[in-house]
Image (cartoon, rainbow, N blue to C red):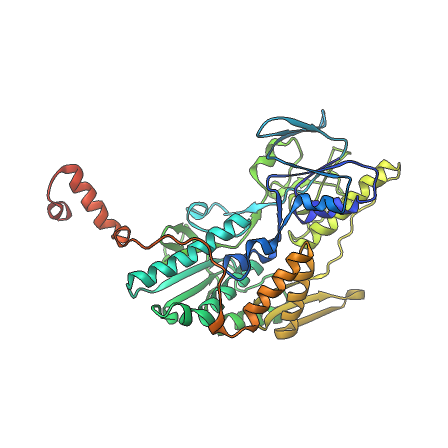
Amino acid sequence: MVILGGGFAGLAAVRSLRSADVDITLVDRNTYNSFYPLLYQVATAGLNPGDVTFFLRSVRMSQRNLSFRQGEIAGIDPAEQLITFAEGGDMHYDYLIIATGATTNYFGVTGAAENSRAIYTRAQALRLRDEIFTNLEHAAASNSNEDLAIVVVGAGPTGVEMAGALAELRNDAMAAIYPELDPRRTHIVLVEMTDKVLGPFAPSLQQFAARALRERGVELRLNTSVAEVREDGVLLGSKDSEEQEFLKAGITIWATGITVPKAVADWGVPQGRGGRIVVGEDLRVQGLPNVFAVGDVALLPEPLPQLAQPALQGGKHAGRQIAALMAGRPTTAFHYHDKGTMATVGRRAAVADIQLMKGRTLKLTGTPAWIAWMFIHIVMLLGNRNRLATLVNLATKYFAPSRRTNPIVGDVPVFEPQLRLDEQHRAVYEAAEKAQTDPQSVAR
């Protein structure tokens, strides 16, 4: 059998077949699994990228019926039971689990894909981290005394956690490591089109998160939509609105919405709302009895949230259904067990909505929720080395005095003043050179 995708759902399916008499091939475009819930910590220099990634071939050390193939899926032929790869070649399957996940959804906002930064992959997190520190270093070197702003679009868990981490980086470390810059002139703005942060959470938890963000100096722009993302900021307000506001920003972070990759349309599988693959109650793809789809890419009769727990539970269920089919038993319906949700704003500030037995819930805020968040996220990591490294780095970040903060940074290009010419001045001189005339006459 073949499993496409080495994320939460794919690895859960692999593990569920550990004892099955089946040869499994795990296919992924990357050679590693990324722990998405902590990528924002990489982007804000709190964790090393290696802390939240796991080499997929290492899974074979504890599961000998598994092999790995790195590749980009070009197409699936359900009739011939073949997978073709973009780099050439194909692979036969008897059973197939599609667990390729999702990608960033820009909702058709002009300039969002080109000018904003997402944090859905390790590469994106590293790029964002380096851009943040490039902006800080260049502002310190230029001595321009200008305000700096970072705009985060989307007040779901990712946006809230990113805004909170950026605010703490500014509040706790900036005065010590960037004495040239005034922290009060570095602004973190969280933009959300609805009237609340953390929409899926209970109102009391939403209110706590909003209050914790404001206490950390995050500017909340609720009931605010984004019409356009430009290289130097965002245009707020709907496209059809006459009342629009331009918010200048050095970096815009896109932390709202995910969608199925466009390539899925070429895979010969039925798609429903949002391009997700239509599956039945047992997670089998509609009309394809030996193909399953799980996680963010799957659309069940009763849609589930695109979170880690549905992916984990769905992957495990799909693996068990294949084992049942191999043994001649019928499949069973998938029933999702909601274990709750949680999000952190920063040090000793988090919210948790934990589902208990018999429909009861436990709502936590502040330090208890923060400790629960730390514990669960560390436990969910793959590999003891990753768990230990993350524990050490987060403990150093949150419990060490701020004056000892040591952000985990990458490459920052050296500041070159000539590259900071005003765009209008640059256009004037380029036009003058082209016309072979005096720049002042062109300017006039």
